Image (spheres, rainbow, N blue to C red):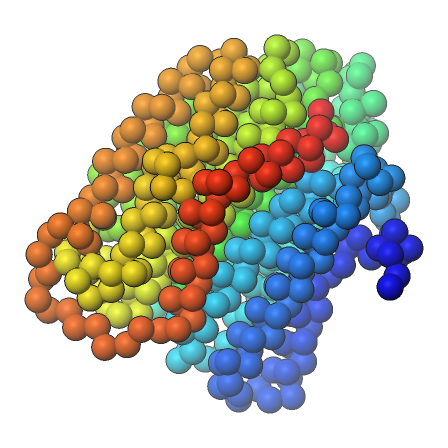
Amino acid sequence: MTSHTALPTWAALAPMGMFVVTALVLFLYDAIDPDSENSALLAGISVAGSLVSLVLTGWYLVAGTGQPRRNGAITLFGDSLVVDGMSLFFTALTASVVTLVVLASYDYVKDEAHQAEYYSLMMLAASGMALMSTANSLATAFIALELASLPSYALVAFLKHNKGSVEAGLKYFLIGAVSSAIFAYGISLVYAAGGALQFDAVAEALQSPEAAGVLGLGVMMVIGGFAFKTASVPFHFWAPEAYEGAPSPISGFLSSASKAAGFVLAFRVFTVALGGTAVLEAVDWVVAFQVLAVVTMTVGNFAAVKQEKVKRMLAYSSIGHAGYVLIALAALTGDADSAFVLGSGMAHLFVYGFMNTGAFLFIALTEYWGVGREFEDFNGLATQAPFACAAMSVFLFSLAGLPLGGGFFSKFYLLMASINGGVALLAVALVVNSALSLYYYSRVVKAMWIEDPNGDLDIESYPVGLYAAIALAAVVTVLLVPGFGPVAETAQMAAEMLV
């Protein structure tokens, strides 16, 4: 059998390429049979494509492709793309989330028109997210960001008969357009200060920048662009509207995979391109991220407490989790073990991908059954769907940081990262906000298991695809308790190549 080391370097992009190939296959099928309503075939093609991508990524990670024990990072297309441990780690996360979302979508959209377009857009968005993890220049980063964003706008507005979905898609698009302009202008200012776009070249050029003021403004605008993509304050307003109006599987997709893609790009930009001392003297972005982290997790959690709709509560809680992950950049102080700090953020994103996606897929299940959106609509739901409610309880308690899922260890690592970086405020904010989140997550669990049923809900069907996706997410979330060590170790090894 041919060894992977004998493969050409472009083969390193095969996991990402599988998303593109799958999208093209779906487009071709739709062109041949545009009136097809074969939901099983369309979902099957999509699941197969994402699983092949996941298997290829796992193979490359185990074999050491793009990592120091082989020949190090693989660069392609004039060093504009790089395949290393970090890019493979996040591509694996994206493929895992896509697999779950496609499985759940089989039941959720099987009565909708344009299903081929739905799955194709998801694959194109996933390819953009994977491209974001391999971007090695500011120009590629912008293109990848747009490739991930444009299909996402359409996916949010997919339910054309639903006014909320269309309105959410329009708002998401308008705010996204503004943030793209800010991001592009920030890139142009950084280019004006350094005269380079490729990350290593930017770092070298900015060792002695000629226009520190221009550079500082550019860096702040780039931070603004990332704040939008990761739903961080002050560019978080789109998230509750988009997540609530979008099909629930897409809400899980955007709040997990899309957010992770935004963070991995930010990790690479700020540690490789803008991590130099001269840049920090022009604008101390570490302090900026410290402020962003504390404000984002606090605003997200306090807003979640006030919500009366479960899906909207999850949307605001995802903003709080963006604040937690920002610790990975906010704790990169001079005294910190940078690989541990960055690796902690990556590991939390990996765990978050399963527990948060699972929670939104449970919401998709309740929407399939016609359960209302308020907390009291969930009263007594466990009497009719005990397995699904048990899985939802695992997701919520893991999101809160209880040791029922991997969220306990990922938050503990973020806490240690805050202490390691000597930023006590981040540690305090993490603990206080996690305690607060336990309150509103417990409201859902209480409604499902303790409150008496309303008596007006009769569940007659148990959709296989949705149940399979929720069960898979729950199993992985629980297994990440004993399995968190290898995940954290892999994340830290990937981070060591950047810092």
